[in-house]
Image (cartoon, rainbow, N blue to C red):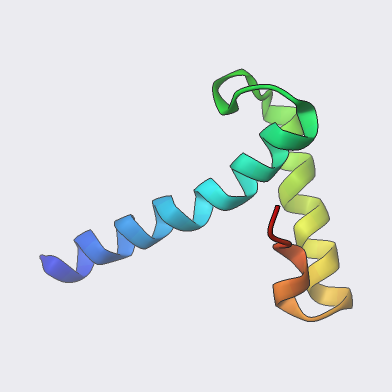
Length: 61
């Protein structure tokens, strides 16, 4: 059971990073992001990851 807990913990933590960046770019709280904004961010990160080093998609703010 511990493996599943670690997986979901890592999933949540990994999801927060792009959500925080998207919220910062939109100058709004995460809770107010639209589905369109979130999807656009993940698509953008996916394109950057395939065109460059995968870490380039997650620039620190």
